[in-house]
Amino acid sequence: MKYDQARWTDDGDERYEPLLSEKANREVEVEDSPLPDDLTRDSLELPDPAEPELARHYTRLSQMNYGVENGPFPLGSCTMKYNPSFTEDVSRRAEAAVHPDRPDSTVQGTLALCHRLQDYLGRIGGMDAVTLQPPAGAAGEFTGIQIAKAYHQHNDDERSEVVIPDSAHGTNFATAAMAGYDVVELPSGDDGRVDPEALEAAVGEETAALMLTNPNTLGLFERDIERIADVVHDAGGLLYYDGANLNALLGRARPGDMGFDVMHYNVHKTFATPHGGGGPGAGPVGVTDELAQFLPDPHVQSSKGGYEYYTPDHSIGKVHGFYGNWPVLLKTFAYVTRLGDAGLADASAKAVLNANYLAEQIPYEVPFGPFHHEFVASASPQDAADAAKRMLDHGVHPPTTKWPEIVDEALMTEPTEAESKRSLDQLAAAFSAVHDEDDETLASAPERTAAGRIDQVEAARNPRLSWQALDSET
Ligand SMILES: *Cc1c(COP(=O)(O)O)cnc(C)c1O
View 1 (tube, rainbow, N blue to C red):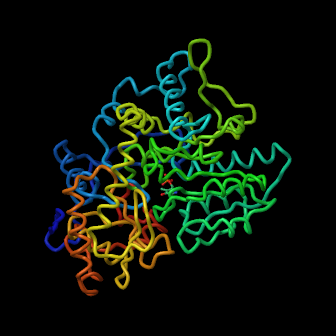
View 2 (view 1 turned 90 degrees about the horizontal axis):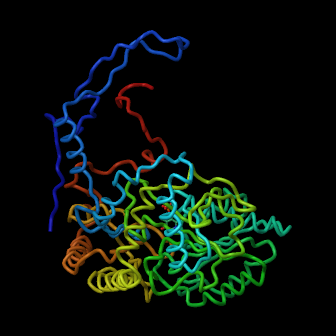
């Protein structure tokens, strides 16, 4: 199958869709202001399109992009599952739009919902208390590690190290460093898992926590998790669960039962709400009873037949404005409630089945297994990034590439339970077609998309997040 993205060209102009400010502008006179001259301006240009122009502008931009509603999106570790429209309906309801400064006595329904979601997430993860405040998985990690730090400090037990396997997500290393810890990197064992003996050598009285993803980023379940938990706990450390791969365990196994003390949930992965372009998301954090006194402020608790905000005794303070990214949390609530226990267990079963079916259909080697909801194939001798770009020409979103580094030219692939057999077969056909193509074709891909290769490093290091025209200096 071949795919062509919409392109709008203007007589050789390489820019396919002008900015709104380049299309239709209106000069606005600015009235005299009491502010100092260097803080004011004499005139202001504002985009002034008619409604159809505006609607077409955004529709065209969406046609120049690839999203979960275009086709399969097996971006490993990100769990880009289709977002059912009922979750959007719920979060868009007018009643959901409450001002965060309203006193708790006037937002009892909202707080009841927060409280129920805390409870649901706690039961799903096997955790005693949950905060909904952190706005992303990475923010959840930072919150969780701050809680671990507060716990050790509370016990007059300053520790300096956080242990992290080399297959972990980059945010784990960044979190530990930002929280002021030295990172001890744990090399994976030959089977792609944590080697308990290497762990024993790495863990000691300086260990504040071990951060672990289970199943790990290769999709492998850490079978020695009970022994791993004992090693860390015996040394006085805490066990942190990176919840990005919870979709593999949903309704079947719980981090709390495996010995984890603190975890985050990437609700924008596990419970729909796919997180394109860096947001929006939410990263609630669950903890055991022992750690609940350190949760962020405010927390929601039930009281005398109602609900109220309260400050946990030794709270680490605020980690985000107000009580979290509310529309995303509402979608999570809608999704969990609609699926129920049986539906959640069914989702993880199908996610694992789909990953295993797809891996069987593709010509690339998958060196590690048995895997769960995702697998990491090796594109070698092809360049994984080139192969990935070419997949777009075949109408599918590529997998995550070049990570984890333990697999040569990694294609980290996670189809999710949302894909039918037909779309899994479409994915497999794209993998197969790309597998048989020559290096020259791959190196010049993508050909059929609105934009060719962009300079990703430049885009990440020097983003121009401005309403101003691209050619203006400021
Ligand atoms: C996505 C991810 C994170 C970070 O979560 P964000 O919500 O993107 O901040 C952490 N660990 C793993 C394994 C992930 O896949």
